[in-house]
Length: 101
Image 1 (cartoon, rainbow, N blue to C red):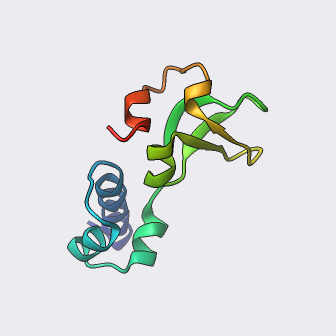
Image 2 (cartoon, rainbow, N blue to C red; image 1 turned 60 degrees about the vertical axis):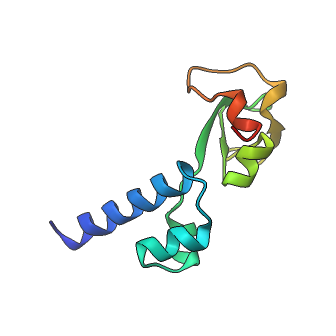
């Protein structure tokens, strides 16, 4: 495995652990042997499963706090919207997840 492949695998693991666990950021970073900043740099926004009513592009959750609050961001027009107020797309976001579940 090349150095790039190892870095990509580490980034993917960090992203997966961040979005799919309730572990603290400090604990995830510790488990991965990286700093909090490196962990946050590895995290990719998660699809919110709804489209932006302003421009039509996909909304995302930039972090777990926004996902818990149900507040999604449009990376194209920088608008934020409550996902509870918007019709779901086929991206598979569960509104129960927005409530913290």
